Length: 151
Image (cartoon, rainbow, N blue to C red; front, side, top):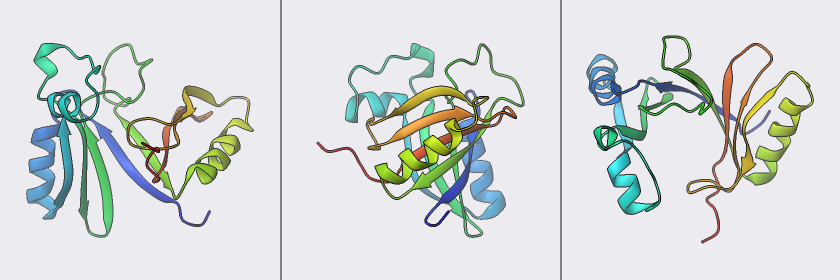
């Protein structure tokens, strides 16, 4: 597929801030973006709910190094996940140019009846088309249109 960017997305259950610092030092990574739960609630979504002890957890971050983009957060992407454990803290983020490309990719996943929809394709705070699916082999993929939703 043309114009598709695939980025690892790590979910670290309270260790994202430490991991970001570690990868910045290890890989000389550049931090492009970071927002905590508290900041997201104040700046983007006043209805965002989280346990008070997770107020300063990283809701989302983006870093680059060696020509790669990594995304790191503390919060589980798969909301069906019952508990955090090594192995369920990783997903691929598939970034496409617009909603049409997101819809096309989403439908390609759904063509296999074994695909599980974790979150159906819909607009959200940061994208005009976002979905989470689990492929037949248990790998979680986030589909993200780079286009922002209309205000």
